[in-house]
Each structure stands twice: as C-alpha cells, then as structure tokens.
Image 1: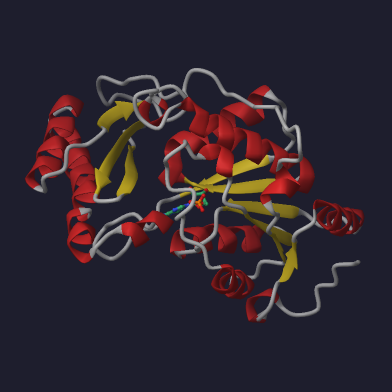
Image 2: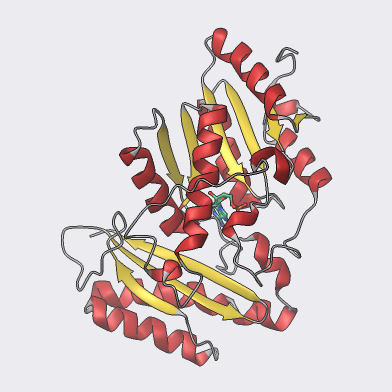
Length: 296
Ligand code: AMP
C-alpha cells in the first residue's frame, strides 16, 4: 500500500479512508521515509467550518494531512450523548477531500480500545475545574480526551497537531500533556469559527430547536459584553455584564469564569497577561461551551 499524491490537494474529490491501524502505520511509514511532514487534525466528525479551518491550516503547512474521525466513547460520561452524537461519514469524507485531506483515519472502537485496554493518561489539576469540575462534566471527560489523543500522537506521529480554541480547556490539557510526556510535536490552537450571528460552531448545535438556536446566541453576546466591560471597567464588572446578558435570555450558566489560559487558575483582574473568559450552559438538549481570550 503506498500513498501517491497525484492530484493537487485543492481539487481532490475523494480521500483515502483507513480503518485499520496497521494500514495507517504502513502508509505513514512510507510518507515518513519520503521525508514528508505530517499534520494531524483529530475530530469526532460531523464536520463544520470550525473543523475545516483546522484542516485548511494543516493543508497549508504540512506535506501530508491526516484527519482522524472517531467518536471517542471514553470521553462521554454515562448518560451523555454518545449514542445520539451526530454522524455523517459520507459527507465528512467529501468535505475532508475538498479541504485537501490526504488520509482519513476512521477506526472502529475495538481498533482503538482492544480487549483489556486499561491505561489512562490523566493530566492533573487543570482538568478538575470548569467543565472538569466533578459536579459538571467531570475530569474523566478530559482523561478520555488525553488518552485518545496520546494514542493518536503515537500512531500518527505528526509534526504538528491542530486543535480549536473553542475547546480551550482541552487545548490547555493537551499542551500540558505534550510538555509533561515529551511528545515531539507542535500544537497549533486556532481561533473559534462562528456563525454569522456569533454562535460558536459545534456539531452539537444540531441538537438545538429554532427557538433554542436563537437563545443560544446569548453565549457569544455574554462573552462580547464581558470583554467590552472588562476593558472599560474591570474584570469583575465584565463577568457581571456577561451574567446579565445570559440572564436576559433565561440562561443559567454552569459557569462563567475568568481563568489563566495556560493553567486555568482563577484570575481576578486583567493585567499584563491574557485572560480566558469561559462559559458553559445548557440550552435545551445541548450543552454549549464558548470562550473569549482577552488580550491586555
Ligand atoms: P470535535 O469534532 O468537536 O471533537 O472537534 C474537533 C476539533 O475541532 C477540536 O480541536 C475542536 O476544538 C475544533 N473545533 C470545534 N468547533 C470549532 C470551532 N467553532 N472553531 C474552531 N475549532 C473548532
């Protein structure tokens, strides 16, 4: 099996689909022997413009672009939306091809978690706050993420791996893991892609009814207000303004907090360092997250 890149990436209409880890490893070994740089974009599929921005960045920077497509069961808590998580592999393949992806790795669950799998990669500390608070999604979610991402890093051995700032806590945990475990790669975190009305794109937006979809715009409005008022007055006043914006839409957030974007420790005021203001709220059946990075 060899990977011959015959078509220019931007005009590709089909993409190589790989389900077996062995096939992936041999294709990538060939690529590496040829000296190609490898970019990895991990996804759970049901692609939208947020995913596509990562794929395009990888395409622009790397010789070979690998997208993983895997709805990772270990990052879902019991009773969460694993079973109804939206899936459309055919559409994802077409969009990935259009974005110039060379290879889609779409393993079955058993291919990733063989019988007897019992290892967890756990980043401590910053996975226990915000979404990782045991009263909310909990740290196990992030342990599921770092475990599967560590496995992907080991199988794909990318030079660069691309993630969205939309999942700011995930990015912080992965950066921490890469540093602690000496993964020889670079992490690129790219800006949040939004709908024209401000809603951060997410596969889970598919759960929203038209009325909920409208209400959900309050999250980005709240972050906008938080940033503006923080700059005009103070961070505390900014967070208050954000909470008012949510309350006006009848949304009680799980949290709206200001944190250090790297270690996620609480921040009291905007000084010389960027501040991450992050929000999570349930709107109908969807649990939505969003954030803004306030630069000094
Ligand atoms: P997911 O398929 O939800 O696991 O997301 C795959 C990658 O796309 C993750 O790195 C996400 O942070 C990123 N992503 C999801 N939504 C957006 C968005 N609206 N803007 C930028 N990146 C995103």
